[in-house]
Image (cartoon, rainbow, N blue to C red; front, top):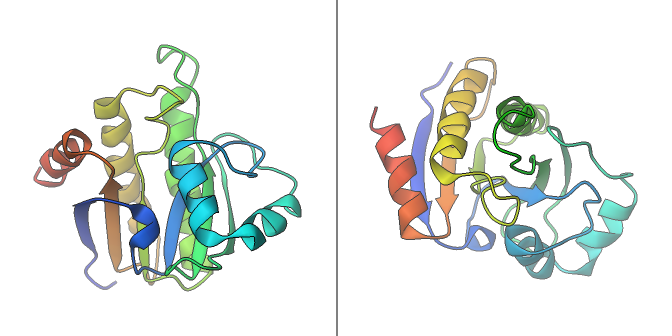
Length: 170
């Protein structure tokens, strides 16, 4: 297996030139606020049209579409959990998003993938535990993922980027 590069970038995930960007989606897959809304706006109306054909997506899983007007070839829509205090299976559901996204990237020949901080926005998942789940799950999933050689954790703000940098340094 090739060496996989893991990195952190702060900025707008919709601007990244990668094979797949991961959308922090809701179960409808039809757009929303935050990263979800930004991806839908940047990709254009055809993304929503394709999402309508997918029948939604359960929490803890993911589905893939074309990237349309994005620089990315694909959008992987991962539905993270709403934070309910940590006792409602949130870590397992969040880990499921990352595993499903890596699996879809592998199945669709994506060498590079960019993740936002899934569930940390309006879904309320605390930043540090969400980042710990993200990094540990992605590292474990990459052991089974042939072809994924570059993973970007794309943070919208400096505080989140620093959390990810600290975890990748370990």
